[in-house]
Image (cartoon, rainbow, N blue to C red; front, side, top):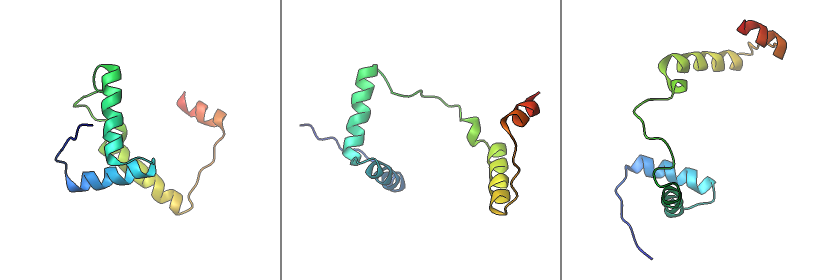
Length: 89
């Protein structure tokens, strides 16, 4: 079996270990799974892009933080699905 040595940021490695362990994998197993999937797909198993997900944009994060704060303060608004759909129109 081949051995591969990589350099990775300490914090990223720790976060990766935590995630992979929660999935029942070692860091090494996760890297092997990534490489196996890349080989099966003939490329990266995800899209490489310079674009960021708009969900994580500054404006949306501010809205989400405000919503979380309001929820924690008990300021809930309850709407039915039909009321929500009507708001789209």
